[in-house]
Amino acid sequence: MSVAVEFPAEVQRGLRAVPVPATNADVESWEVHSELTLVCPEVSRRARELLPVRDPDAFLTSARKPILLPTPAAEESAPTNSLSAAIFGHALWRLGEVARFALAAVTVLVALALLAELVH
View (cartoon, rainbow, N blue to C red):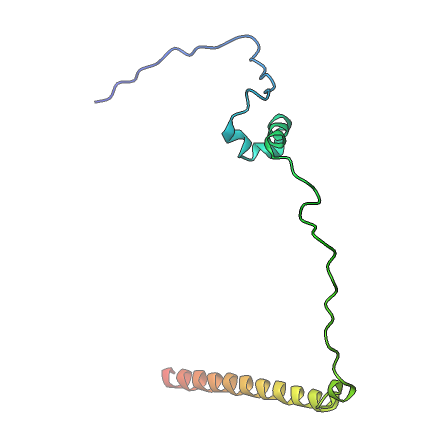
């Protein structure tokens, strides 16, 4: 058994209360450590006030010296294989991959044809 109960609806007339901007005393610690720091100017200002004072040049001890790498001798820098041999090797490798794929595709097609013939 169920009973329907109606409660009277209360309609409030008039203007809603306008939120008052927060002051530094109104900013809570969880607000400073949340995303509100990015979007709320008051919370952002309070978070900057809480940051410790730092020396902007504290991390600079001295100018860094350049790192010099040894350069190879002229005979070491020459490639051992010529460019044409590398291109030929790559073309041969790709031809082998294409042939392997074609063999697998033909094998699958022959198997499907034999299966269709058996079923038919």
